[in-house]
Image (tube, rainbow, N blue to C red):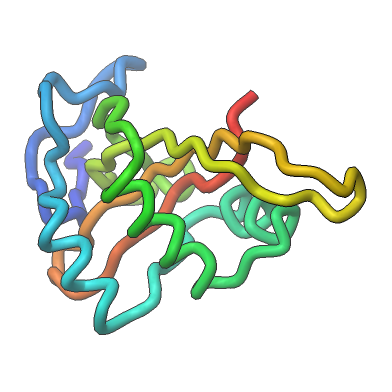
Length: 137
């Protein structure tokens, strides 16, 4: 079976269970991601990522801002291959962790929130595809 890759990074997707991409740095250039986000909103690629955004009460503008903040102030974790569902094309994504203080109305105080994001640049070069945006466990 031939695996189709729809991310700008066009390496070889995994044949087994290991989805990690061996790299020490992000494979999606920060400046390029930021440039794309100046012109367009990110696209959520999985049902789970849509549900996670709804759970956070985020829209695509919020997601865009969070990706920008993760690139500027967050910590790069690793890169890995992602799919929107089984048997779908592969996307080579970078994952980031972003810690930030946010005021929680229900508690009437600030808490440190720890966000986990996973995204990539689409093969077309004009879309940022998002696979994860949720609070870390």
